[in-house]
Length: 289
Image (cartoon, rainbow, N blue to C red; front, side, top):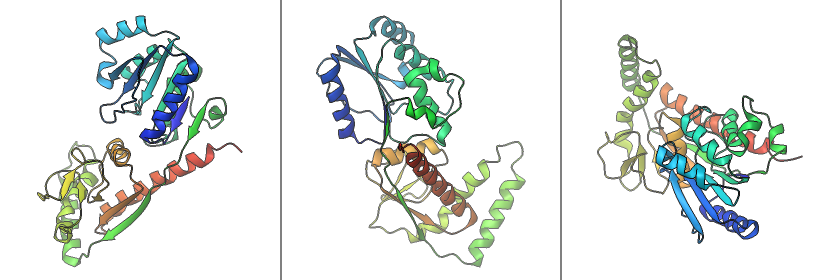
């Protein structure tokens, strides 16, 4: 079964019910260190972290131990969009050993609907090998999707012509010095650059999250060190997966973004709005008629 969008307590309830009704003797939890859930399992069980899945001491032992009396829980394991990634392939070997599998993921994809095939591969790699995503696949599997709506709003900071000119000068400088570097570094660097225009407007009574520690303020944390409560966003993380991790960890139901209104801030804001739209449409399209 595949369950999308569940809270910790909802996950625990699913696992508890499954164990009570299937005579399971052993549980293996495949998880990411970014999102570990304690499933309060009373029978024999083992937690195997992402980086350990491919290690020989785990791999061969688990292949011997996992059988059809074992439940495998795949917990927030969509860590790359590459369906052929080695860790995924090793996990498929484990999953082929038993018919009992529960696949949990907070969002249905990292970037777009094609990523959902990673979860279907966990369910049955042989069945979906080489296939592109189709909503028709959901009708043939035990899939349930809970859509956790996330609101989005902008908190504008004022800018003037001098700021606009400084922005344009920095953009030209970045283009001139691009050389053979990835062009994507230009919006990434510009997004960090415009933070200097936001700093004077940071409210000391509020809490913020930023891409790095350059603000040097006690009420601004980085994504890496952000606690499990939502913050006002000064910079979007340039990697979708890292921002998704932040949304999962904080269970955010709204995102407030401090924006200069300059093109790079508008770009990142619109990209997030587009992503929210894709998640919403996927959830709506997955509901049976």
